[in-house]
Length: 377
Ligand code: SF4
Image (tube, protein in one colour):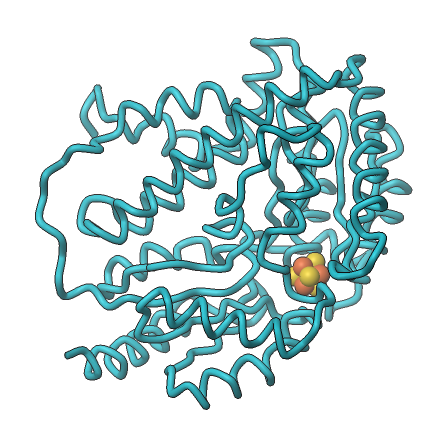
């Protein structure tokens, strides 16, 4: 690696995120507030003076946590609890767990009982996103989050604090979207693995610094685009197994778009800068592609999904479904039927550190790539 490698700060954080958070805390004397994925508004944590730190349990092998959770719990929850039980999260000053399913709703109770010295709270995200009073409810809940985090950091964010954080995060998202565009145009340099490193580090680093580092990336590389790469669309919770995007690179698959909670879905929507800040964050939440298990008119959900896939130009769709995730499983029959009707090839992968190996996933991806690349003009 070159000494002036512009990718280095991102890779360093992605390789050792926990160590990074610990050193940041020692260096800055600040508070680190963890949050599970998806849809916790990081801007609120940032505006209160905390370092927002995303917790991903998906790639973690669980042993201690199995004593507290049933074996049929998804690895996202199991892995997060495992990390906390083995002391990996001892630098956290607080934890926010979003309500997206029964698993996370119950996890927060366990968390509060097991880690009484770490303030933790359930963010009661509205799941009926088309319900009449959803906006008022979400505004009240986001304002409650601001108070809760303010109690941890000692600074309840003002309107100006929130507006400044929104401006920063909008700029960061714009820069990350630009990186996605480069990946579509030139996946040989802007690889899928590089994208993962940018996104993973963004959800753990101080966003001001991350944005400044991004300016040093090779935006004007001038390299030709790779014509053999096969465009795919991905839907899932997180990039699991963590090396799945490196597999895409090796197999010549390019992610033209995705609905992954730590992928394009996470950065697609900005919060409007001309609105009152909490309203703007709620606007962003409501405009984001609904996560698995959110309730909206089922036919519109499916039709919207197929339209987005068609518009992306993808040759096939890959689902990265966490094993034991009822919400993802619930969506699958309608989504796969609609894709079949639209004659769009689909690969459904069930992911978990328990019982599913990276090798199995690679073999299935290879076969899928072979199948859909035969359909290239
Ligand atoms: S939505 Fe699925 S993957 Fe996410 S916590 Fe719930 S069960 Fe686990």
